[in-house]
Amino acid sequence: KVRITIDGIPAEVPANYTVLQAAKYAKIEIPTLCYLEEINEIGACRLCVVEIKGVRNLQASCVYPVSDGMEIYTNTPRVREARRSNLELILSAHDRSCLTCVRSGNCELQDLSRKSGIDEIRFMGENIKYQKDESSPSIVRDPNKCVLCRRCVATCNNVQNVFAIGMVNRGFKTIVAPSFGRGLNESPCISCGQCIEACPVGAIYEKDHTKIVYDALLDEKKYVVVQTAPAVRVALGEEFGMPYGSIVTGKMVSALKRLGFDKVFDTDFAADLTIIEEGNELLKRLNEGGKLPMITSCSPGWINYCERYYPEFIDNLSTCKSPHMMMGAIIKSYFAEKEGIDPKDIFVVSIMPCTAKKYEIDRPQMIVDGMKDVDAVLTTRELARMIKQSGIDFVNLPDSEYDNPLGESSGAGVIFGATGGVMEAALRTVADIVEGKDIENFEYEEVRGLEGIKEAKIDIGGKEIKIAVANGTGNAKKLLDKIKNGEAEYHFIEVMGCPGGCIMGGGQPIHNPNEKDLVRKSRLKAIYEADKDLPIRKSHKNPMITKLYEEFLISPLGEKSHHLLHTTYSK
Ligand code: HC1
Image 1 (cartoon, rainbow, N blue to C red):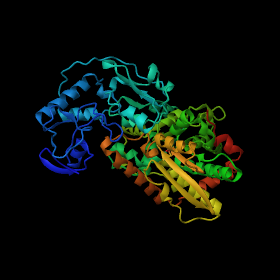
Image 2 (cartoon, rainbow, N blue to C red):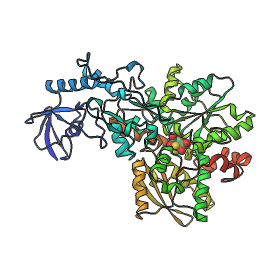
Image 3 (tube, rainbow, N blue to C red):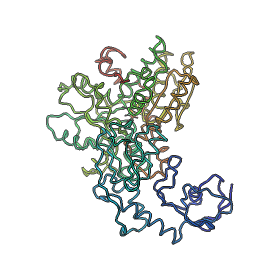
Image 4 (spheres, rainbow, N blue to C red):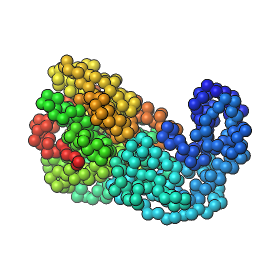
C-alpha cells in the first residue's frame, strides 16, 4: 500500500493502483471517455487529466501510477480548462446531429459536454464527410460520429480476439475501420456487437429492422408472430428506467400484444426443444462414438468465430439450430398446419439481445422449403424504441401471458440467457434420461457465474463427463487452443459468443461502463430467479414439448427434426 492525498483527502491505496483507481477509491469522480477498465487503458482522450504536485505536465490519470507521498489535484482551474479544451477538440470534429442520433439521451459525449458546461465550440475541426458502412447484415458503422477512443477496437481485439477493425490512416484522416478500405461484411467481423456496447457515442449501432416489422404489422395479409429470447426479459425494463435486472416478462408480453402482433411466443419454449434434440445428440455421440467434444451451437457470433478461426472444430459443433431458428421453423410448419395458415403468409419476428441473430436468419443453410425460419430480428434496444414510439406506458403495464401452444417453458429454457445455462439445462435432462429417474439435485453450481472459462467433471449414471463452458470468443480461443495442444479433454462444451452470455449481448441496453459489473451481476441474478419462479425446471418435463413430439415431430433426431431443426456449417 502507498499513502497519497487526493484533493487534500488522505488515502491509503494499493501500490499498483493508477491515479484514476485511487480517485474512485476516495469517491472522487474523474471524467473518462476512452477508458475501459482492463480493456482499453491508453490515456488517449486526455479527459481524465489531473495535476500532480512536482510533475510539470498534466497527466492522464487512467495510466499514471500512484506512488508513496503523491499529492493529486483533480479539480484545479488548470485541470478544468485542459479537460474542457480537449473535449471541445473532440466535439469540433464530431458530427453533432444529436437530435437524430440513435444514442441521443444515452451518449457519454453528450453527458460529458453537459457536465463540463460547454456552451460553444471555439474550434472548427477538419470535418471530412465519410460514407456510413452499411455492408454488414448486423452492424452499421458511422465514422462521422466516431471520437477515436478505440474502445471498440480494444474490445474486438483484446476481448473477442476477432481483429475486424483497427485504426486506419494518419492525422485528421484517422478513422476506425476494417483494413484495406473494406466493409465490415468483408472483414472477419462475427457480428457479436460487443463494439456497439463499448462505443460511447452513436458511431456503431445495429442494422435497423423496426421498419420492416412495422410494415409487416400493417400488412393485412401477414400473420405476424413474435418470440422473445430468454435474456430480453431481464434487461428490457432498464430502457424504461427500471432497476438493472428487473424481470419484466409479463409487461413485455403486454407491450407486444399492444403493438399488434398476432401471437406472442417464448423462445424459451424452443430452448427446451433444443435441449431435447441436443441432449439426445450428445448421448448418441457418447454411446455410438460420434465426434467429441460436442460443442453447443446456439450463439451465432460463436458459430461465425468457429467457421472463420477454428474450422477444424466444425464437426464438433452440435447440428442443432439455435432455439429462435427452431422456433421459426416450428411456427411455419407445426403451428401453421394446426391453425390452417399458409406458412408463406407468416412473418416471424425474434426479439433478441443479440446482433448476430440478424445475420443468422439469412444463412443459406437455414432456409427450409424455400422459406426463411425467421424474417426479422429486433434487438432489446429496438423493441424499446418501438414501445416508446407507440406511446405505451411500459412501467405501468399489467402482466400478460404468452400465447400457446409455443409459449410455455421450463426454468431450463430461461437459464439459456446466461453463460453456463445451456450446459446446465442439458445436464438436467441428460442426467434424468441416463439415470431413468427425476433427479432432485439439478442445480449445477460448477457452471454458473461470470468466470471466462469454467470446467467440471460430472458423474452421470456412474460415468464421468468432462465439461467446459466458455463465454466470449476470446475465452473460446483459449479453451480450443488447450484442446488442440492436448492439454485438456472434454466430452461437452458450451460456448457463448458474448462475455457473460446473452444477458450481455450486443443488442442489450447500453450503460456507462462504470456500471458494467453491477449490470452483469443483476441480470445474471435475475435469470436464476426467473428459473426458480417456474413450476417446471427441466426441459423434458415441459408438457407442450411432449405434445409437440406426440403430434408432430414423433421422435428426437427423427426425420422431421432433421429437416426442420438441424443445420450444417461452412468450412
Ligand atoms: Fe440467446 Fe438463445 S440463449 S442464443 O443467448 O440459445 O440471443 O437470450 O435467444 O436462439 O433460447 C440470444 C438469449 C437466445 C437462441 C435461446
